[in-house]
Picture 1 (spheres, rainbow, N blue to C red):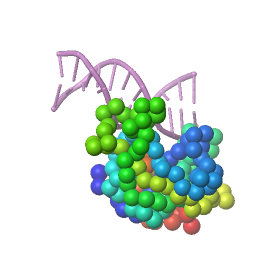
Picture 2 (cartoon, rainbow, N blue to C red):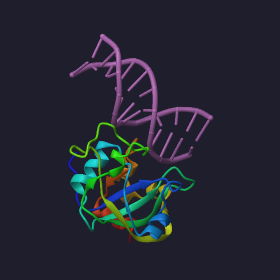
Picture 3 (cartoon, rainbow, N blue to C red):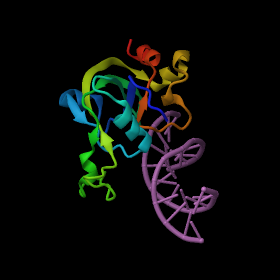
Picture 4 (cartoon, rainbow, N blue to C red):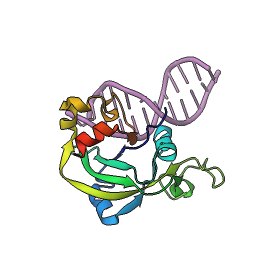
Length: 152
DNA sequence: GCCAACGTTGGC
DNA sequence: GCCAACGTTGGC
């Protein structure tokens, strides 16, 4: 899959890391992504400054809760080398890292979240990767036009 | 808690 | 390389 440059969406379960956590931290390494497609988006697609929609999943009201931006080039996810981390990958070495990440920085929290329910109803968003059948990617690209519908 | 839709793993 | 079994995601 050729990564589409420019605009992105990341998912997070708010019980594990929410937009409020990001607001407080200002910037965070997006650790723990263990899916090759998502990794490729971060490693090969994301560039510093790219806008990112921040999506809350597995919660009472799933939806886009804020906007962030890419805040670094891709670099190896340090948790893959840490045997104590839940994201430890014994196959990874510092010479040959498997997993890469970028830093994500807070931009803003939306006054009202754009709920998944609304996204589904909006004909302008019907082709969003987020809505494609069975899409469980935690990092995905978003078209500029789709991005502008959500972050107007 | 259920279940559909995947991705990954491992036997062959 | 195939494919069944298994694990995970995430909406509902």
